[in-house]
Image (cartoon, rainbow, N blue to C red; front, side, top):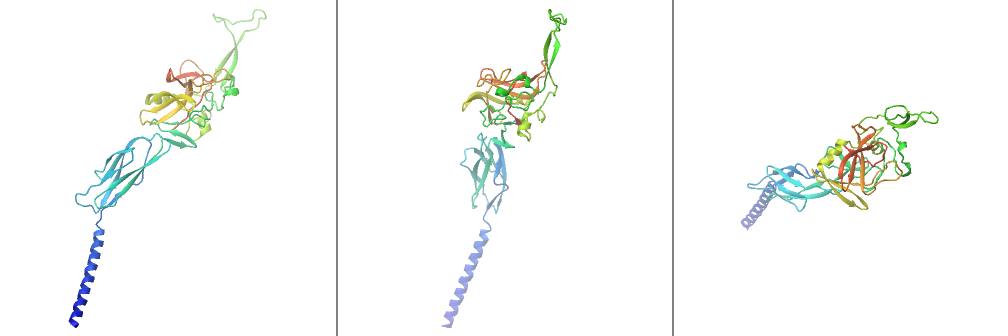
Length: 338
């Protein structure tokens, strides 16, 4: 009987040892489970289309193991997991708001890992005013100074003036850098002219302009965009408008009740809209509203005509181009920033 009890005790001890051994073995195997580790997660990307890569490592890799990736996000494509990097391409985001997508990573024996991709919206904000990155040297605002929406006219300013001159507030003689003077008139031969009855000199009015330089962009004394919006906002130069023209396509279209050009970057596909809201020239009524768009640049005209500056002239028939016009006419302004 004693022998039987001893045998039972030994059997129980052996079973306990085997159970403990199995437990330790299980724990040891748990330490060998592969683990996917990403260098970066989530990934922040710009609104522009582009290629990205995130480095990864596999702890406790298995022989012949391979990292694979999949996504259900339509704007994430061209997945590649070779050379210890998760590579992918994102399409451009033309919407104002950002968006998020997921890439799911798989490896033999490892738990799935989700890589989150956050893409910025096409519209960003500076000092309370929105802009679009068209892939150019400057970013373009989404609306005019004084406008609440991209289809609104906003303010109308004379060149280098800091006052909204639309409606009854406009007249050419209010231009602050206009100097009027009278000189005695001359005939075609250059002789001074006098009134035949009184003998008094015949006087004629001459307009001259104060020289404030050839580029007012960013100058707080003359740049209304810098004054109104602050930060690095400014009136674009003629060179920056030429860059816009060279790198974008222009389609005459409607936005709400406004007509104008939808401008699309050839570089990254981002868009802005500039309405055709006319201008003020000589009279207190707006001319060509809805059929003509005209926007100041910061660049004075360098030709023989003194008192003129370059501006954007746009119509459905004549397209989108640079021209020049008198300082004392009043036009909208579409600011830019760095």
